[in-house]
Amino acid sequence: MKRICKWKRKPKGAPEANVAVDYIEGIKQRRGGITPQLLVIEASKKRSPLHDCFEWNNTKAAREYRKVQAREILRFLVVVVESETEEEVRHIRAFIAPPEVERDDGASYLTIEEVRSDEDLAFAYIRQLKCELDAIKQKIESFEIFSQVVKAIEAVKI
Image 1 (cartoon, helix red, strand yellow):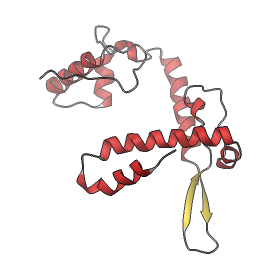
Image 2 (cartoon, one colour; image 1 turned 30 degrees about the vertical axis):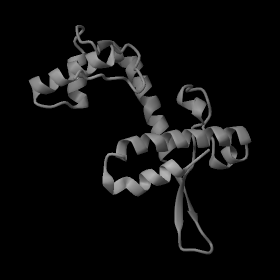
Image 3 (tube, one colour; image 1 turned 90 degrees about the horizontal axis):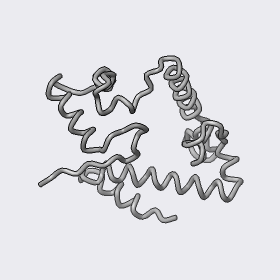
């Protein structure tokens, strides 16, 4: 049976998914494993089918990596909310990236209050969260231990 591979999101400059998988499996066989560091080393060779997936200009790559770090800062800050009636403590993200922010670095992150107060933003964010839940469901549905979680995710309707 022929294996068919696909990109979930195709990176810029990427070859067909089957080519990428075969190439990575070749590295794994030659090197005894695969790590992100090894992939970068192998892809740095111009003949690599993954070469064009990477930014090789170090100045530009550093600038782009700092944007990744800035996104992490915005994603990892949380507001601690303590319930007055219960002893429950919740951690809510301080800043949220509306769906368009994932594609546009110029768009502003928002607070949950800002998102909830705008009907269109709230719906878009809920739809984004449902997509994330569905992605988690795909990862865990082959493990029986998560069967109740899978059922709960399936029960969420927008």
